Image 1: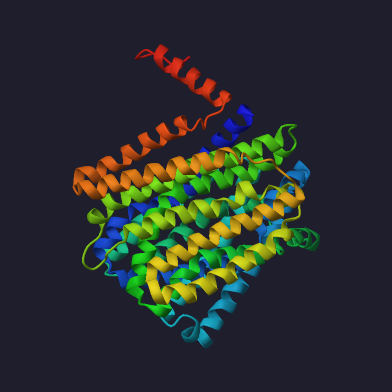
Image 2 (image 1 turned 60 degrees about the horizontal axis):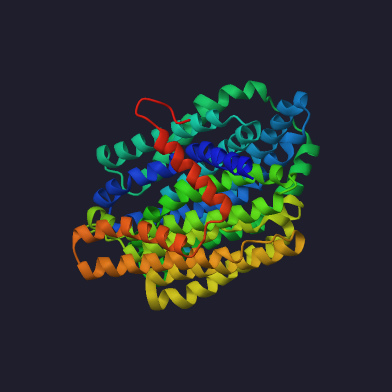
Length: 492
């Protein structure tokens, strides 16, 4: 088990580095955006980003997952031709989808998203056409295990986007559209410098058999993937519908701060998990590993989310201003919601390893319906806070339903006795740290609430005997290695 968990952590770190660059750019730009843009301007960008995300899901046709599933089974000598067939099929398809979106937006865009002007619509179409190509190559790099090439390409894209966005807004006077133009320029540079030179290995090769085989895997995933994206982004739509673009901006930026959890934990875990889940399945102790991974996911994820919730009280006074307020409550709730959204990975083992992913489609579609109902019911009454709570509730319900479907296909004896101890310890420590911060009512107390929470959480976990014998032995061995370490020497 220890070797499997180490492999999962190492893969999560490597792929997380690559996947985190674009998110890291977003985090670095938070002070810049809150200083240079108004909440309403960022809210308009958030609506455009929502439309772009939904378009990418549809035009991608689930090919990234299909490539990961099929590529390892393709004979080595035929892999270049296989990927060339994917490109020959997907590039025209992505362009066609961008054209259809553009035409639809021109005809009825004012009805669907009245806040988006013509410039933003054209930018959304252009970015979607370019990024589908990058997503295909990103899936190829992951399937080939070329993690550092993936990381390098991601770093290039993120750096160009960062520099271009800052130059456009500061030097050229662009507003929210400058963010999308920066992204478009970064995509064009990435394709021109990294992807186009590789096309000589993948010349046009139309093979309908390859397309049909991949579509059989990818198309059934679209309803679930689209529903998942709608759950994630639709709160912005409801907030704008019942409130204002400024409310959307506050919600989106507060969510971006909470996205530290997504960036540093949930996303790397997901990428590593989707690579490791099938190799773990071949092990005789697979069920035990799956159960242990769920426990550790809840432990690390909930701790990270509650820590970000406490840090929100520190970050908001630093980042917010009169033109761009932020909400510590939304930061905390969205951080927990992002961890809850990631529960789909450790709880959804059966459909993946048994290749019956269509079984979970009704769950995701149901989640999209639930967020719509809750959004209509809660946002008019509680505004952006209601949208954040609705998102958290939907992800928790979705996790329970996915677990039920997965257990019917591939039963796993999860560590049911340890999970309540874990959650009780973390919630108790968080409540005490929050009470301490509010009673002390000082900036120092706000900073001290984070180490207090962590110290109390560790104490309560030990007091409730959460660690098992193997974990205690591992911790003791780690402490012994630290004690034997001397400055200037390597750990034994």
